[in-house]
Image (tube, rainbow, N blue to C red; front, top):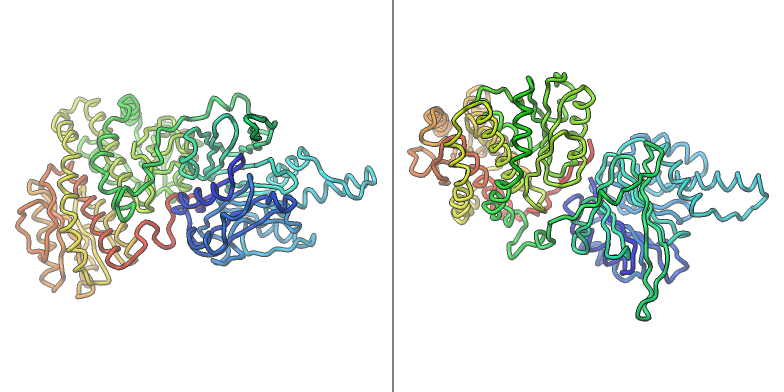
Amino acid sequence: MCGIIGYIGFRNASEILLEGLKRLEYRGYDSCGIGIINLVDSNNILVKKNIGKVKEVSESENFEEFCSNTGIGHSRWATHGGITKENSHPHTDCKNEICVVHNGIISNYKDLKSKLIKKDHIFKSETDTEVIPHLIEEELNELKELIKLKKDTPNYNYSKEEYIDCVKKAFAKIEGTYAVVIINKNFPDTLIGLRNESPMVVGFGKDNLEYFIGSDVSAFLKYTNKALPLEDGDMIIIDKINENKENNKEHNSYNFEVFNLKNNCLKVDISKNILNLDWDIENAEKKGYEHFMLKEIMEEPEIIKNSMKISQEEIQKLANLIDDCDKIYIIAMGTSLHAGMIAEYWFSKLGKLVIPCDSSEFLIKGIIDEKTLVVGITQSGETYDTIKAIKYAKSKGAKTASLVNVIGSTATRESDVTIMIGSGLEISVCATKTFMSQLVILYRLFIEYGKLTNKDMSVYEQELKKIPEYISKTIAHKEVIKRISENLTASNYLFISKGINLANAYEGALKFKEITYLHAEGMSSGFLKHGTISLIDENMDTLALIPPTKSPLLNSVLANVEEIKARGGKVIAVGPEKVDIEADTLIEVPDLIEEVSPFVYAPACQLLAYYKALAMGRDVDKPRGLAKSVTVE
């Protein structure tokens, strides 16, 4: 999980790369670096990199002082090799002619590296990525030897076409997942990108004067909203085509072509796939909030309104698929899986069995045939395990659908039906507003399926309109939640509930441990007596999600809370206003019908986690060891 950015055009590449890395830092922040073709030094490759966050490294390595119109950048989340300067990207070949950045995993890199070492290649890092420039270099070496034998030309300089052909040959030997951007000092006006099961998007500047390549559009959205998502096997070649002189200024103009390595063919009419995105770079600014996470929580009422307007036609289409199929799986990871668990309860009200499943386990236990529907939920549309599971389901004849936040992402191209969740950019690693948008889409799907099966859904339709107001009432208590969080002193936390908000107990625990680094786990309150209650002491606090007052589960959860209190445990309750409960403190939420209650319990838990992490001095938006888009297994 890493962030990549490439640029070719008329601006100073170093500035563009630094801007892109800052916006991609949520994808990885162990280390970072840039590689440019230095125009003032015989087109030599210049690499600057180090461990640390983008701001720290850019300042210590003076990223912006170098002059170039072509370059690549990378922010790393370590998968192969420790967090060291040597393992930071970019990586180069022995001659320092070829420079690459990479997101993904080269699964056969050990075998490739061993063969390259036997051919006298010298490696400087422990990474899988470094085999890429050396492999291209070796293909060029073999080409030179062949030319030398045929033409007796000892100092043969390979052409651009031969270089591109050697890149293709090198990647024919590579196995695994990758999004790779490559520059070559001998061809300073050429930028190459390749993608296989790792996200890559191309941005188009005005009048073909500049091009961008990024892990996602946030890398270049400040400069253009025209983007082309690449598909698996695609290799894009961006190249200078001419030089125009206007008003005594010289501008390089560029063109591109996309070659698919899997199909071994040039893709025609590719320009028709270019998207005009409606995202604004202002969405990526904090707007006065201390952290993106808080900003994104506070945006939830408005974001919900956006999600309520998402295409009714697509939701109806998916409701029909649910009705037509015998087995329905919702596959997802992390927060998205918790959204699927809530949907399971909604559909059970209508007598429809919907099975939420961890995407990484689906290939092991999924039972699939032509009457199976698999719905993948993935914020980025690039979550590796979920994409893999969707592809597997398709190969077995299942119908597929996806709920995503990124138009043109892999999940959208692999699914029979796609529904955008409408959250806009989410920068904080912790998913907050995207979770709420996922819930809205699933709730609307629940309503449509009920209407399709002749159920009276009028109550649920009326409540849908009120959800933004309910959320606003909850987050209005943020100062109270802040004070409560600052008084939490335990080092271990249980999040408990029953029924539809059990999934919110799981989600609350996930948010809490993600950013506080304290141990937290969610479970059914009924499960406490089967072992966990023995852990209750002064170091174990309990966060109890109390069902609405009209819920048949209310008394059961209240009894479980009393059991904790009887053992000296501290209980922080999240529940309906004026509920009679023996808790140490209560975070009040609106008293709603049970089916709608997840929309208010979730933001309360999000704020609790945020303010506790803030009190502990944690890096709230970029928690250690985590990345926004999980594109590796």
